[in-house]
Length: 87
Image 1 (tube, helix red, strand yellow):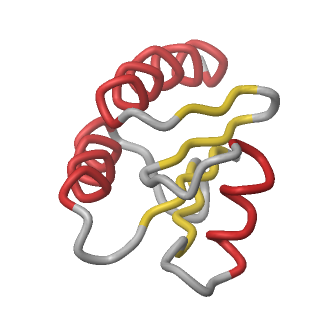
Image 2 (cartoon, one colour; image 1 turned 120 degrees about the horizontal axis):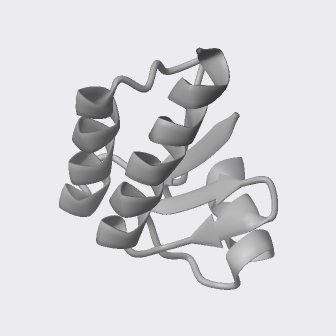
C-alpha cells in the first residue's frame, strides 16, 4: 500500500490528496494517508526515510519522493499499473 505523509494546512498535500481521489485511489485500500505534522510519528518516519521534514512525502516500497508534482505523476503511472493487474 502506498503511504502518503501529509499535514493539515499544507496546500501541496491537499493537491496530492485531491489528485489521488480523482485518480480513484481509495484510502485504506490503495493508499494510507499519514499525519506528518510536527511532533507526530509520521514526521519522525519522514525524517528517517527521506532525511527531510518536508511534506507531502510518498513511500511505496523502495520508492520515496517529496515533490507534489512528482508524487502526482507517480500516482498516475502506478494507478494504470494497478488497473492492469486487476484486469
